[in-house]
Amino acid sequence: MTTILEKPTAKNWRAGRIKPEQMAKYLQNGRDFIDDEALEARLRTTAVPDAARIRAIIAKARSIESLDLDETAALLHVQDPELWAEMRQAAAEIKHKVYDNRIVTFAPLYVSNVCVNSCVYCGLRQENAAVARRTLSMDEIRSETEILAGKIGHKRLIVVYGEHPTSNLDYMLESIRTIYGVKVPARRGHGQIRRVNINAAPMPDEELRELQKAGVGTYQVFQETYHKATYRAVHPAGNIKADYAWRLYTMHRALEAGMEDVGIGALFGLYDWRFEVLGLVAHALDLERTVGVGPHTVSFPRLEPAENTPFNEALRWRVSDEDFEKVVVVLRLAVPYAGMIVTCRENPGMRRRLLPLGCTQTDASSNIGVGGYQDAEQHGERQQFLLADTRTLDEVVRDLASMGSITSFCTAGYRCGRTGQCIMDLLRTGAEGKFCKLNAVLTFREWLDDFASDATRAVGEPLLQQEIAEVQQKMPQAFPAFMQSYERICAGERDLYF
Image 1 (spheres, rainbow, N blue to C red):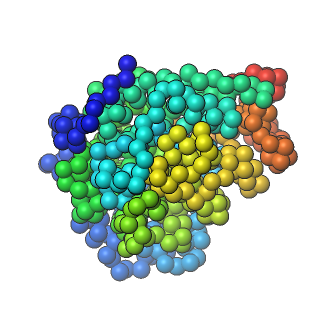
Image 2: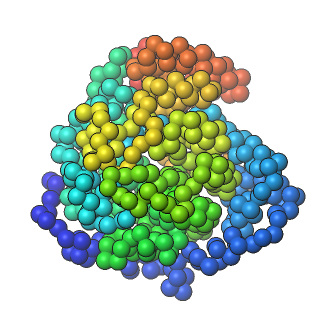
Image 3: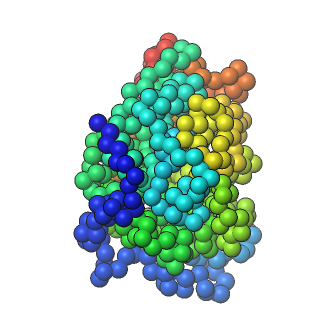
C-alpha cells in the first residue's frame, strides 16, 4: 500500500534518510576517496605528454584494463591532433570489441517532480514556483507504460523519482510492480517492459535490499559534481542532497546490498570537465577496489536550460562540443568495460558524432514531463530541463541502422545472471559481446515485426541479414541453435534469448 505523507518538510524527511554509520566502513581515516587537491594537481601540470607513454596507455585500454588516475590525466593533457586521432580510433575499437556494433535504447519515465531539495541548477528545485508539481498514480503509471511498451515499443525504462516522501519506498515498489505488469498487444506479438532501471535519491541499505528484490536492474545515482566546493555551492546546506559523502558512497552500499548493477554520472557544466572525468574514473576505481565491481554504466549529461532557472544561463564551465567529444573518448579508454550513455539532451548531430566513439546506450521518444507520454507534448513547466532531440524511437532506430548500428532491445543478461562481477569479467574478455550479438538480432527481429514503420524496416532488414551472416561466419557452432530461435521469433514467439 502506498504511503503518502502530508506536507513533509526537508528537516523531518532528512532525519530518517541519511545514516552515516552505513557508509563509515568505506572511509579511509575518516576521509572519502575524492582528494580535490590531488586531482587538481594532476590537471595543473604543464608537461607535454610523451607520445610513447600515451600510446602505451592506449594499448592498456585496448586490453580492457582500467586506467589509473595518472594515466587518465595524461590523456586529458594531450594536445597533439595525431594522438587525439589515435585515441578516437582506439575508443571506437574498444567499444566494438566489448559491445560490438549494438546500441541499447531506453526511455525515461518521470513519475514525480516533487522534491525537497534546492539544487540551484535544477528546474525541479522546491522553490521553483514555475513548475507544476505532480506525482503519478498507479493508473497513470500504467497508462504511461502502455504507451511506451505498446505504442512505441520500448523494452527498457529508466524510472525517475523525486526525493520526497510522496516517492517513498512503498510508492517505488508499487510503481515497479505496475510497470512490469503491463502487457499490451502489438502488431504481431506484444509490448512489455523487461527491464526497469531507476534514477533515485540515495537510500538506506534496508531500502536498497527491498528494491533489489523488486527486480530493479541498474540503480543510478549521479554525483552531479565531484568538486567539493562546487558541490557545496550548488546544493544548499540543510538539504538532504547537501551531504556529499552520503551520495558518493551510495553505489558502494547498493552493490553490497545486492543490487545487480549501478550507474554513475556527473553533470557537465558545473565545474571543469577534466576534473569531472577524473572524479568519475576515481569513483569507478574505488568501486572496483572496495566492492570488486565497477559501474555498469557511466553517464555524462551536459547541463541544459530549465524553466525559471537562471543559474543555467551563464555557465562558467560550459562544455564545448569539441571538449565533450574528448569527455567521451577519455572515459571510454579509462573505463573500457562500462556502458556509456548519451541522452536526448544532445541534438541528433551530436549524438551521431559521439555514438561511434564509445557510447553504447541512448534514449529515444523521450518525454521528461510527468505524465508527458499521454499528451505527447514537451511541457517546460513540468520538466527538469529541456531536450534537444525529440525524435521517435522509430526514427532513431532507422538512423542507427543507416550508420551500421543494430538497435538491441535485449535484457537477457539480467535474467541469466550475467550481472555484477560476472558481466564485468565477460566484458573484459569480449565474451559478453557474443551473447549480445545473438540476442540483439533476435530482439531487433521482434521489434521490426511488431513496431517498425515501413521506412525503418526498409533500412533495418538489410542490416539484420548482414548481422545474421556475421553470426554464421564468426560463431558457426552457435549458428544452428540461433537460427532455430530466429525462426521461432519470425513465427510469432517472443522474448527468446541466449
